[in-house]
Length: 348
Image (cartoon, rainbow, N blue to C red; front, side, top):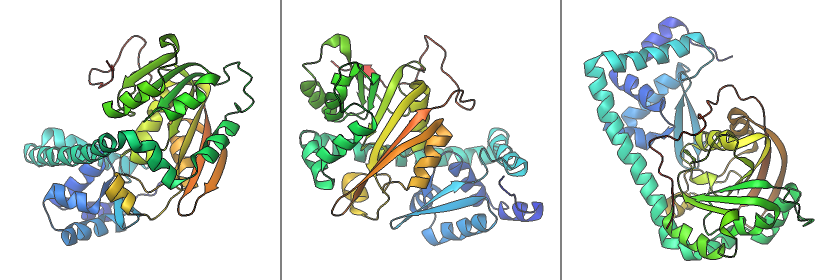
């Protein structure tokens, strides 16, 4: 159980308007120090001082990734009644205190601009490299070996033709390579990507699949346009490192996976190649096994078999999981309904 600081220390730590705003921002998403400075329009040294106070009080925790330091709150969703109550108090203040609400509203507008800039950077990269994406992937690892190992973990290398993958979802399909590779082992393939440029390439690659076996959609992996428990197998191939909030992507994957269904994630082991963030719009510099175990567990998957394929510079990891049942903290979407704000649509 998370331990709260003594009440006097907690109140002293939050006794500053900037620190209150920081906590509200971090209740919404994990942010880097520089991003917090940009949102609050303060210098990084000033923000760092506020963060030190919040960290020492146990209200915020740091995560270093390359040269960036990311922060997240320990209050939101905490199993400590006092920390959870403090988080609810700040949320209530945003609703009742007009001055505080105005500050938070301005912060959220600037945060939205930052998130849009992140997404635009990733989308521009996808659009610019759509036709050469497969070639770029080969620079990172030997795809043939990775694909063979993934097939082995999914028990499909025998090619017995009985659709062992069932209804399969390829999240962030990119050029459609993984969907194409595993389509012979699936009864139906759904593939989703946010980039129309990528989907155009994927459609050309998957054109031999009959329409009755293929569903190609534009959409976001944090708001999948599918009903609950729709799939037997869900795949993330070299896509989760683009997620600002990988926990949301995995929670959505769990929602659309039937109980007992499987997830497989192919991504980089944690590394320090900062240029992938700057040049290739990676939001995450890979994942440790501990991070992935927690992400899967929190989403509702039990960690299964894993594999590691070391390259000259980067190591590719494969993690698999099985969807537990029930998952009490994941709210199922009612049958026949979809969120009004979904961006998914069938591509022309």
